[in-house]
Length: 281
Image (cartoon, rainbow, N blue to C red; front, side):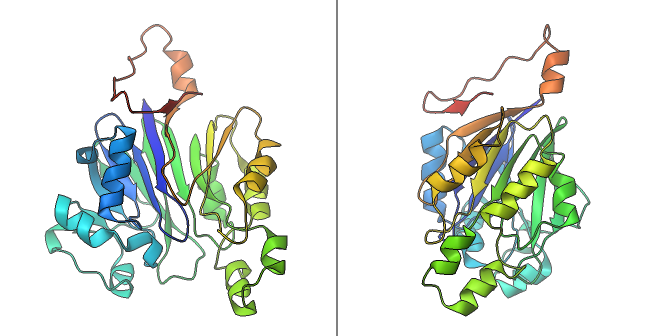
């Protein structure tokens, strides 16, 4: 009845997000090395053998650079669109290549993964929602502007990785060249703190328990700033800023409505390695 999630890394230096249940999991993107993925999962007490597939959002290097070694070593199915495959210069054995269609769920064991298109300066970019027994987690980064699809799926999420890439004033006053500033804020770049906060305030569902703020800019944002900004509107929702240098803890996401309906017959929470750090809300 639950999902376990962690950000293994989040930022322009590499992105990799883990979502799974007690038996199977997926990765969204693999923008850090296979060795780092293995090391960080081991530190968290997560078994990499539970990872059954990798879903690729788009072809930028901070989302794919760890893929070749990871896929070859573990023979994982890779869900990627043909356009992203070609533009990323990737090549994998045909038996491992899979694709997906917007708004049509793909099933990995008991996990349901649904992709939807987003605004980003890539050839064929997608975001993903992962569901298990009516518990839903979204992975929403590298988004130029909140579209109707993002709003629709965000409203369904018990937890989400949500981009809060830049502070508008810091970007404007910073030393990036004007073409790069315009690329970031131009509608096919990244979400600002304000855009992400507006989405959160206006569209968060009552049952949301966790929000992991993701893909923060190294030069145009600060974790302290964005934490304070969202905490002021969080209520009972736990706000976590995902790091560009290390993994977060593992968070346990549960559908509270189901939990309340099964107070007498609740399934016991499985036992994991003593290294595993959970957050319960």
